[in-house]
Length: 170
Picture 1 (cartoon, rainbow, N blue to C red):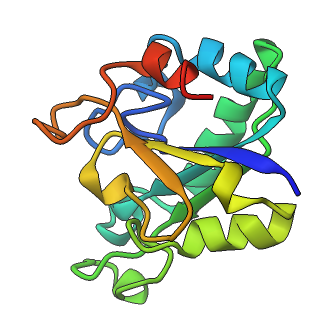
Picture 2 (picture 1 turned 180 degrees about the horizontal axis):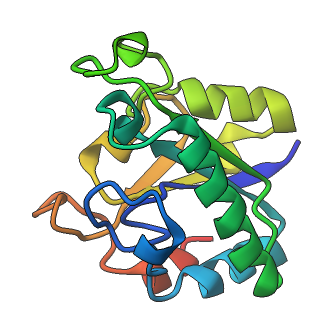
């Protein structure tokens, strides 16, 4: 079985701005490429799990999310890093776009995206790590270790100050 480093997107991989969905809105977080290279060197798969409520709120489309993820994949590839998968949840209970209005099992902190990744990649959850910047990134899944990076959302409830500290946990 494999192990995975699960990464939240906005606030971990890139600086969190209001609903980023275009390449020109993306500023990569300090240390993200170093963290990913270290994880790869230690045998981790790299998997992005991200809530994308902007789809449900009508700010952008699922195609916009997929295009951005393709672009991000290329940016990581240019650094010699392979992201194994991007999983996203377009649903939100208060959606303005009716077809996305639901309380989905894939919306973090629910474990749907990670459960799908476990199946897709034969991952050992007990050897894996989830990194987020909000309390909702603490996935409700026994055996999965989750760490929260200090951010504007985490106030006093954080485990590490930056991505360099996450590297030491691998």
